[in-house]
Amino acid sequence: MTAVTTDAAIARLDDLAAERGIALERGVPLAPLTTLRVGGPAERYAVADSTDALVALLALAADASAPVFLLGKGSDVVVADAGMRGLVVRVRADDVAIHGTRVHAAAGASMTGLAKRCAREGLAGFDWAISIPGSFGGAVWANAGAHDGQMADVIREVEIFDPADRTRKVLGAAELGFAYRGSRFKHGPEVVLAGTIELVPGDPGEIGALVDAHQARRRATQPLADQNAGSVFRNPPGDHAGRLIEAAGLKGHRIGSAMVSPLHANFIVTDRGTGRALDVRALGDHVRATVHERFGVDLRYEIEFVGDWSERAP
Image (tube, rainbow, N blue to C red):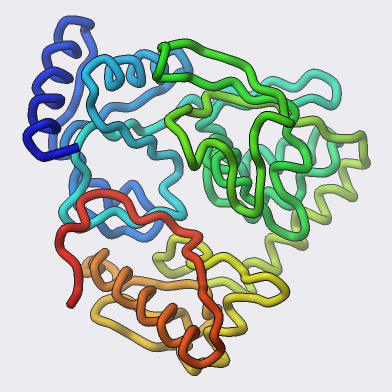
């Protein structure tokens, strides 16, 4: 989409929003809304506190042919210093309903909060989600996983919005195209609104102990006290990205305001108050190049770079 087309789409977005009584904010800083705490503002911004509100905003953007980006808990994402054109929607629809062993969650539900609730309810098979700092919708989108568990293991159906025909649909698990850290939603415009997972009965005390053990391990091995976006790279087949990066001597390596974490090499942390997205991307690209030169392995990003990246490091 060219700049002229985007400008026209934003004008149309504003007009339609006014007609529909939808309030859009301008120039909202996005850095405080992400776990990495870097990046510029949103050209237009709105909050969806319910699934219906989310659908209304998605339909608005589709009708205006305007770019739209959904922001959940702000993990696994690096917003460009120039910010994001189009409409950024903060997804806060987080209602959860439990019926027996089935758990229905809206896209904005917290994965860690959901893991704790399932443990209290005596539902086993979702303890691993305590280590996923994002939202339920984002976890479906990325087929997030940890501790030998992943969304593909538990998801049964997903409710989506299809901007092509402005409709809500329900897809079964076999239709979701799950792969390692991927799904059909990474390759098309459909948006996850909510989903249902199926678990198994278990002892609340035992499940809670497992959740606590996962949390303790995460605190001991990951730089949770520092600004980070989660694991930077996907693990290559048969190996771990962190091991390769550490073996390449890159722990603690710094470019500007970004540094490879001395605690876990597959994390990039940023300086508080002065972090730049450009430094994060430059450091990530340097890590990729170094690992490829040393070991012949091509690391693939797990984090997503979003926004206007016309400014790039030489």
